[in-house]
Image 1 (tube, rainbow, N blue to C red):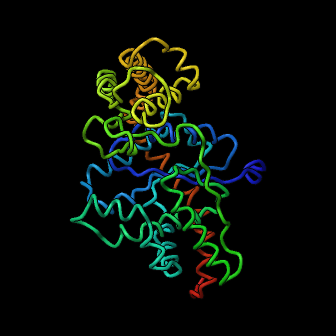
Image 2: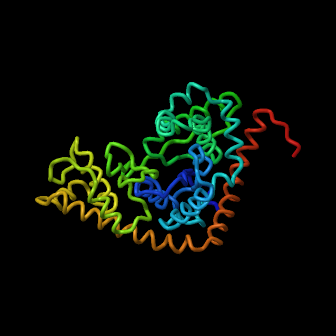
Image 3: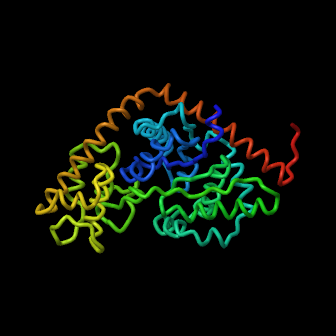
Length: 334
């Protein structure tokens, strides 16, 4: 336990909307598995965030378990980390309300993701979609983390969480630790195979995303159909978004540098390269899927992991929440 106290704390989570992609794996989950021995980690499935977009209730419940099973399949150890569902720790929603009273309307209206999601879901531009960066700030600040692993598209939300924390601290004295964004250099942003200028998405119903549960045939088909430029030389260069993305994927799975990849495929065309990428990705996913199938078939074990994780998370979260409630002046009978 002594080591736990001196380790830096990390908090991160993924939405259970749809199946996770190789973008989620390379940009987040794989890095979490590497960090778990060196940090005190809280990894949640952010199901409260998922309902800003309409969900089928039975599918949402199943997706929560699938996401947890995938966390385990990629090597995230429940004995070393708190693994939990966001909705199982009420302090997330409770702190979110308090922090919303210390967040400015103008700050939320500048969030680029709100604009993007409003355009995609124009029939359901709800208040939750507008205020969910405050919930994200609550997610983070509850656990007093030193670092928050994020992709570059979420950096704006971390900056908002820092602003809210600083504002609250300035009003009421030191309450929240000010977290730093942590962005690993490799594999942080895997792009769509069909639109390589856009991020790979869990909600893509076409061939743009490779899901962690895709079989080998599907993986190879999607890679073969991946958009590339009119050339044939496997070379990383500006303006070659499609081939650059495939090289990034191949590099992330093999550990090879772009120079090594260029040398490996010197004199070969895109067809040979795409086949190699497809085989490499499919083999890596087969190993993850074998482990996933074991975990997802044992609901009792998954429930125990969630119960233990929510208890660990609640212990820390409620300490922070009690401190906040006292600072803002809420009366306590305890």
